[in-house]
Length: 134
Ligand SMILES: [Ca+2]
Ligand SMILES: [Ca+2]
Image (cartoon, rainbow, N blue to C red; front, side, top):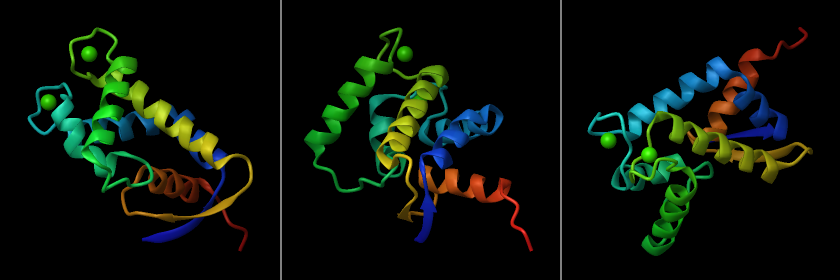
């Protein structure tokens, strides 16, 4: 666990850096697609849920997880095959990151970061692209 100061730009810059964000989405897709068939089933997303959600909602009640899954599929499963392909997954990830950015707002806040969480990746990217005067 690390602590970092972030604002909404940390997250929006991360999403807008297309090459970087594409790699990031691909990585996550491969991680969640445990049977490697190129599609994410509800079960795969459910299993990946704990690390998948930006603020690490590990111990959500099953019912709540089902509701979120239902919302995800209603909104992002564009061809209604009950699977998310890479493009559908990317829309979902973009939406999640934008929601995180809106949640943070314009003023810098201090957050606790879980290793490998979405926010952590955004912060790492920001740090990597910043140059500090020496
Ligand atoms: Ca799969
Ligand atoms: Ca689909």
